Length: 216
Image (tube, rainbow, N blue to C red; front, side):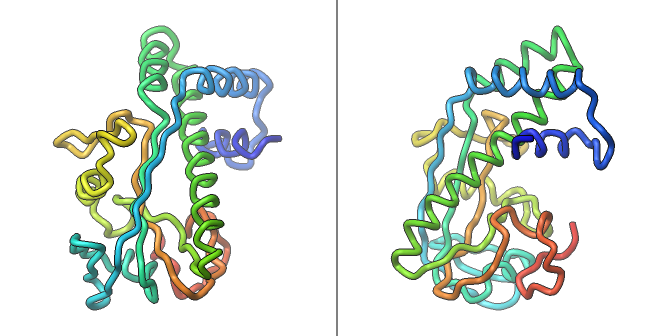
């Protein structure tokens, strides 16, 4: 079973329960439709990073207050701001099925989330390979809304990445992203290689890691 199919099943909440053939077929069809509708785009920029104390830090000109993020970025000299989107075509596809087939919409939502995660992992891997040549190493992605890293910081990340022009990503006053299947994140850069899972603490089994976020 493909990794992204397993991810979609996880997003659908099946847990350890068996997935019926009808749902598996719907997942397969959903990924095919998403591949046709999606326009994958991403952007990243590297900024100087300075930790002021356990809860406050400077990333370029942006002052951030977050104990969880500070723990994740401990020991970093630089930080990456990252943005990615599946594009407006996916939103249009979801809207169409919302009117005609709610069951399919739920599966499409899960598959879109899995596709976005897969794309972000691929982007982060490429960034990591490039920086590794400079003997620099990445920490896991950390998005606004995780732990005590306030969702409002999303607006600053989008502005500093110039996402509206670079990848067509904007944000409403209520902090909703457009297109909706999009993500922003902070990725720490360190000269010390840590065995951190690319997807972060939620999927990592190393419970005693010093960079581990508090349970969300």
